Length: 96
Image 1 (cartoon, rainbow, N blue to C red):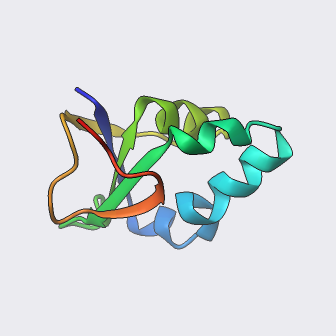
Image 2: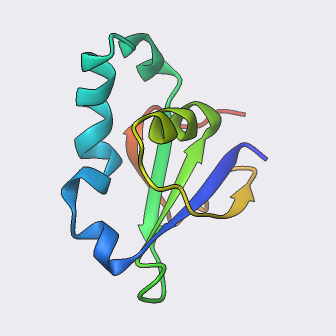
């Protein structure tokens, strides 16, 4: 599978640093890893419960960066590609 699915709770989404669009770019700049920008792909969509308020679909590169940032990565699944209802949040669109 190409994308790990991370669930974020209501408490987690209240911290803007838990949003890849807010925190990943500055992290990549500060760690001199901006070359990864062309390979990161993060999609998101609304979840359906308090424990799954936001679902993030991250490719392997994005998931590695997320973990290196020390962010919680509660994997709840994996997908070949994000669902059509998910929106590109950070990085580049997936390609087959």
